[in-house]
Length: 320
Ligand code: TYM
Image 1 (tube, rainbow, N blue to C red):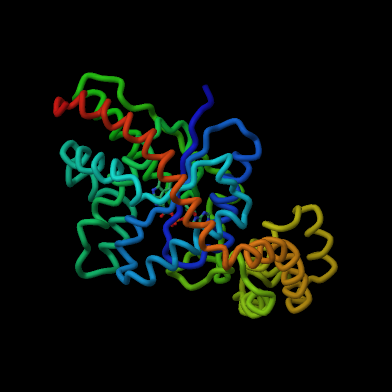
Image 2 (spheres, rainbow, N blue to C red):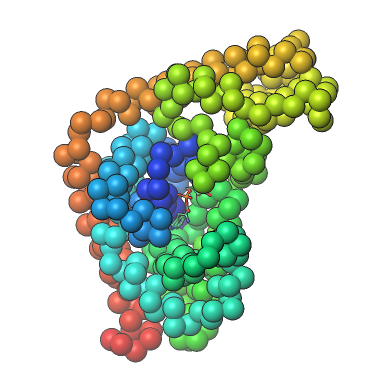
């Protein structure tokens, strides 16, 4: 039997190259390798913490399916589905809620960040890691390709699996491992901080050439600071995604201090990379029927697997 791989993306806006290199590329690579049964989903119930407008939710969800297809995910090879289509996720999350303590969830980085920023946190944000544990554990997942920011969530899933197995004296859940590639664990944005929709520092994965130009030209550089050596750190850090460091060494040495030339080179390399993805996505737009079908078939396959696991869980806790 093949090992199981599972991961998800929230439909909260256009994905960026940080999402792609940190996680989504690993989905496609895994699918190509054929080593795993791949389960790739749209985390719409997680997104509901942020997206609370029905039209927007629908649109962002369909967009993300198009994004999945455009990067090369194939519904014939991977199970592609929407979290809300598989009720076992929220059902299992409730069961986990009864064994997870509040202090444990209060220690989660994401919760602490949210608490530092906002006045009132909803219960969905607090419980985020519990639903995520359910997502992962329902499919006997072995590996979870994610960026560094999700590492703790996978550890939470492991802890919850161990706790459940211990309390209910069973071996119901497998322990998942995060799959994090060191070189792209935290892709930096145009200001050097982690690339993130919420920091407004992203290069969208399907950006137009004009957007790429505008964004790259606005990358923050500092010729008086630590970059006095003539290498603009934020430009270089993004450039590394598209070209080998060997290649870049020559380019950056020849053009020391010439930030405009270096940015123009980055624009070319970014566009060369994005163009085929963008074109593939443009061809898919309009095929909404196809997207709906992908989700219907994905939901069927995911429900089949998840319901078997949920019966096992229900037997372990004694409601069946
Ligand atoms: P989300 O939608 O925020 O991000 C999707 C994936 O992109 C990765 N990522 C990055 N990787 C490297 N550098 C960056 N700058 C960067 N920004 C984002 C994220 O680590 C993530 O892998 N909680 C998840 C969604 C989710 C999930 C799951 C994932 C829900 N249930 C179960 C795996 C398994 C999230 O917020 O992803």
